[in-house]
Image (cartoon, rainbow, N blue to C red):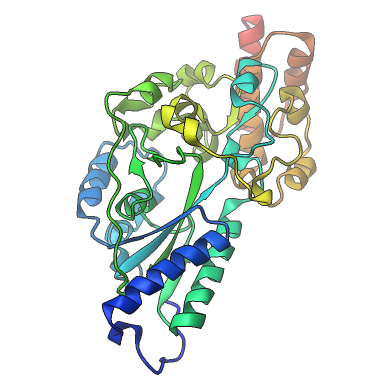
Length: 366
């Protein structure tokens, strides 16, 4: 836990009214830094821990071994960072207002669909920098305190914490939903030893709506609030490092990095507001790029065009794997088939396997 020299008056020795004022200040500073909402949660995640253990027992995490690797530290913040008693949760909208219409892109099988969160710069660094600025503001006014910033970078149950902090509720698709802003946002956290007053948790407003369940192309939402990641297109195109199951390949369509279908179907996203953060704006025209054009990228071009992007994490081999599947689902025109034939002898066995499958979709035989 980050700490500085002992202050003249410990924050823990200050009256509750001072803490209430500090929370109001923290929320004001958060807004000034570009966060759309700040909330304070306690660290009791006992109910979320039960759900997590059940999810792991069902093997719904697939090859994401890191979900179980850290034991109870994911659901017990004080075990991850000793001294933690509160979590400052932050929300920042990412929906790029200048991006091509998602549904139009997915309706054109010659184009590549990239999940809208990944079109701009890598959110991890951007949000962590803002959280550090927030911590600096707190320290400047209130004195030294213990903290550590997290942005999807450690064993943190960010959605249950954000729900407790009043930022939204976990919907049937297992994403966090804000009644005022939908679900197109990132989350970040400051674990802290400050005894801050907590916010009231958000209430569930999904009601009888099952739009997200019906919209999932692969049936990954196996029941309300229950996701089998092994069938999720985001898992298949990002987390999975090996071969994509053959039965699921046709269902992926032209989605080459992530999937936004459940969010597009959610009626609460009619309240979503386009992000004002310049870093989330689309780069390299990836909001509506040609599958054939992307498949022609060399590894150097991939590294250049994905520098500073969340897409970089999957690597060039999985990038080509995903594109091969999408091209197998594309219209069987000459450019598509020629592009696949050009990589039929790719050095990667993984890429070759998916190229052969794609060619079989067009020819009936490779």
